[in-house]
Length: 168
Image 1 (cartoon, rainbow, N blue to C red):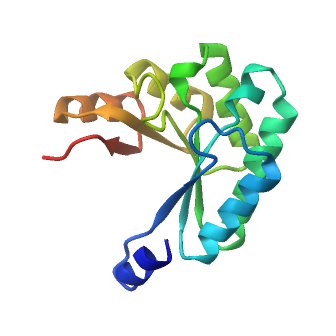
Image 2 (cartoon, rainbow, N blue to C red):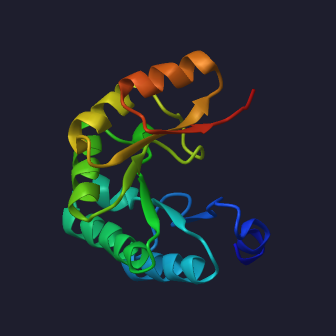
């Protein structure tokens, strides 16, 4: 992160880092510490993996505290927090809960996937996430997007950012 930040300094390019990869199982304190370290080193966007086990176990207080710790760290330095919900592991109800908790914890974005799980972005998931978070949060479609048609479909469904597996 430090090297990348030095290389792009002054260019307007923001360095992003992930915390809690791949399954978000770190404790909230560790995840917040990871975020603060990345931010100190120059990251200005943090993609955090939601604690999937806690979410599936309906420990919503832990999930919200987990997201809030990283969101607070980001807000302290004017950085953005994207919450990766890893939609392919979740039921539709759990996706709604994850997005709602991300919103309550003041995250900036919700994101479909890490690329580590069994599936990537779907139009249905992007539309569902957009419906839950409304217009005040970003939605990033990520994982398995390889064509211009797929990009257009994701944007139509409500994505404000795209994580593409391939470029032109």
